[in-house]
Image (cartoon, rainbow, N blue to C red; front, side, top):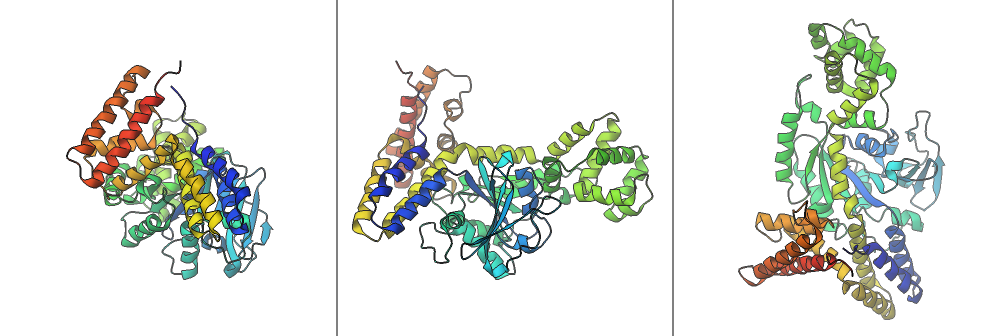
Length: 504
């Protein structure tokens, strides 16, 4: 079986080829920016309403508590977290200049940036976190902020057309950083509101072609523990509500994942110490009635007499809240010899974060190649349309056309038609929609064809049968729009069967 060609390499080669042939500096700079972005990790924006817990989840994704979770200057501006060989915080002004800041004594971005808010374009944070090697995370202010400048800043980072002229004097790195996210995680709590839908629809309508669809957008239902009174288990209610939200948002996100962001941050960032675990162990030894009273409210947990000092109980609340504390006490009471590491792992599972990690891997990282290649081609097509000279326009369009003729490009066509179907523009029977989604989102023939134990010959026959089935659908009974989708899928399965041929 032959391995698929990396689409990013193909488009990068296109950029390297055409750049020296362009006559205008503007066109060369645009192609250079696209080429630079192709080598960067996938850029995922964390968006949502104010106080939805975005920064807490950013810390969990990074694996360090570096993004402030309390309202301050730095929570009112866009902040980009990327991998670096040393920790570094740069406040990027709108004129392109940078002001470097140290992390504060707790290892977080300082609350005061030292630059007037009106002059700040964004904050660029480089960290030595291994989690950022293949994912750049962008924390945005609330899209529904009552502060118009905050909302505008978030929208600019999320929705900027990368080919539009940059007239605010940003240098090339800064301009590249604010040219838009390629995928989005939208965070909300409890009921989905009309402005949540409006923000997601805005992302769909103005972001890059392959990012503006449910395939590359994930909904995150945060603070699931707040659905029930402690110490009740919130997950049965959270799962049902997340399913309802997923149905409501089916045409704008690929799915909705419930999570307890505070537990995720505490466990992923290693904030729970051995002393904290020992304090929890002491509290777990109290009689059941006393534990129940302690967990009845935050005030009672802090104020009632207990063998753990009140200030330490306050710390436990900041790390775990009542749900995490109640979960920990129950586990330690049932298993008195439970080790600290085991407790942390159980809390991590209880946060729902492992499922989010898997979802992000499936939704974004596994398709980084196609997402970035599609974004780059879309951007280059727009650059050709805005080119100042006819020769530059012809050079760009000729190079793009040659890429479009390559068989590897068909993966992007598949993503485009999958976007149309998942977004509701074209209706397909549910089994066919699922088969198209598998074909568009994976390169694993066994998963695509739902044959996990099949060998190459059986897979090739199944791919040919699928191609024939879609061909029949395209010419018999499909609407014109369905037929166009079916023809793309037919060719996709035909190309898959060719890839499954074993080289001599």
